[in-house]
Image 1 (cartoon, rainbow, N blue to C red):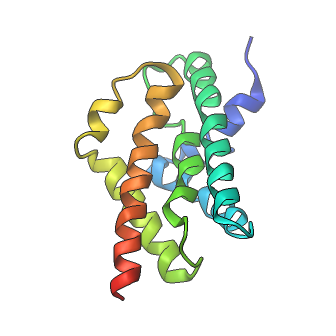
Image 2 (cartoon, helix red, strand yellow):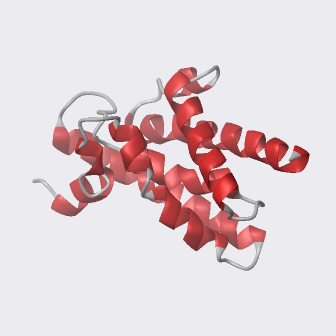
Amino acid sequence: MKNRWITKLATGFGFGYSRFMPGTVGTLWGIPLAWGVSQLPLLVLQIVACAAFILLAVPVCAAAEKQLAKGKDPGCIVADEYCTLPLCYLGLPFTPWVIVSGFVLHRIFDITKPPPIRQLQRLKGGVGIVIDDVLAALFALACNHLIFRFM
């Protein structure tokens, strides 16, 4: 039995069906999520919120992968991208420059999948769909902090 809400969440309310760069288009939903996280007064609360988004993405992506039956980690599933984007901004001011650099870095690491990101994607189910994006976001966060510190 298909659950429309699972499909809607997993595909970023249809953004994942974009003909042009669906992962990048779907990641755009992460910007308002990241803004919401940035409004939390304490870093520890921001970390908890990011963890909650990631933990939500795992079962949503797993269920959507089964429902859509398009193979492992179909491109239309973008909840893994947008739910991990807020990680890219932890501990940083939510300014236009930081937003753009975090977004671009997240996409670069997610698309190129340098080691060990590519190896983590081999895991099955929702964890396999989401874990590579978590690590890509953490790489982007580290780079974003370096850029911010030296600018």
